[in-house]
Length: 263
Ligand code: C5P
Picture 1: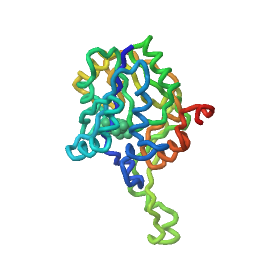
Picture 2 (picture 1 turned 90 degrees about the horizontal axis):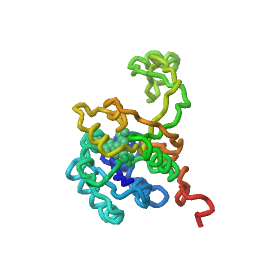
Picture 3 (picture 1 turned 45 degrees about the horizontal axis):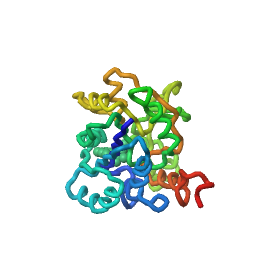
């Protein structure tokens, strides 16, 4: 197995910055290294991995700043850097596909914002890829899942307002429940997702690429996608609160190492 790993890292982190953070989530410190570098490290030393392609920011200025910040570190890991997509993750993966070496047998895609995956998870996903053409990790949905919609008029119904008048309005926004899903069989999907090279290239040759993960495009071809057990700790850092969680998972000096190997 000769795997090329694509790491889409071109997102603007708008939800992260809106959650109160002051810098891009991939630049945040995670036990002594940037989130982006932690995600690359998950693959850099694996025997099956022969190349890594990172899709960085799309805009010229942002891309230049990214190159200045990470260029030497990416060089150290032998990573190829390309420009990602402006708006959508799938644009970034599509751009990175052009850099995949001819001799790769498989392509894995891993979100730059998921630095907490363990080597056990990657073992599981890669081992299954020896048997199946498309493999993704996922965890069963534990919470009840409801659909909600914006409730512009919720403030009018705020009982606090009735008592205190409009001066009692809090800044909190509300949404209204519009339905409850049956969670039987629902799973929350993670990365790394791995595919036979030709299958992923075929998936990305379709006219409609709108999908929030790569497996979705393989599903659209009518091909089977197999699921292996994911990890609760393999969170995607989306908000400032997620970074706190990631730091807790990692511990002060690299949480994916077994305790007896830390010193
Ligand atoms: O936006 P979301 O959290 O789903 O992004 C998942 C991953 O895709 C992140 O690592 C992000 O940097 C990347 N992404 C990208 N290009 C975009 C949007 C997101 O590479 N245009």
